[in-house]
Length: 333
Image (cartoon, rainbow, N blue to C red):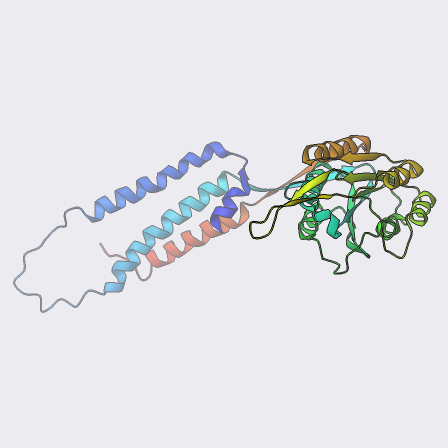
């Protein structure tokens, strides 16, 4: 607790803090005095002496402890400790963005490492970290679509939700691009941001779903939503390892560019083709530069004095020492 207080406290007069070295010096002098020689008196009998009250010996040490703690508290109070609270506010209107992820079985193809979906998640996380003042949401789809995270400025929550995305999350397989895009547009249609963007990431092979891609495209146009489409993968063949040591085979990795180009062009966005992890990262960087807004960061520093409690503690300790010294620990000449 004290360590945390020290970390979050600054002093108006830090040059007074070296006075704290006075306390260990006083402790040294006190211990040296206690361990020094004691006067002796030769007597013939001790029968007339009453037993020494042992608790007074401990109270005598308590007086010194109170004095040291009081001095420490006084020095800290004089150095004027201050609690500093920092707050950062943004001035300007950001962009509302929905990241729309295809989580169908085809997104587990390994033409990316470790696969398409995991590579997309990693790059999307990095993209979120570069945005300032925007609101970001997440939609996932396979045969159905689902809002995993509504648009929010809480980037930590967005990143946490991205990490939870995995194939099979929606159980039924399929690639309902139209449904995914329509749900994304629905999350943005009430937005008052100056720019509304959907980043649709898929391999572009559409089948299944209740809403055709052309209907979703019309929805985006109606509500002024730009769609940036990212085609993940290629039409090349990839090697499939054999089972139990048997020879492997090759299979065609499906990919549909035409649909993604159409969705982007008709809504004022752009189409990108990500063939590997590096180009996928470059695509997100390009979108980050294209969709910029002027945001002014304003830092607020609030300083509050926090010496009052230390001053009260010091006065209370001095009072305790004074009372004990003139009552229980009173000495006679």
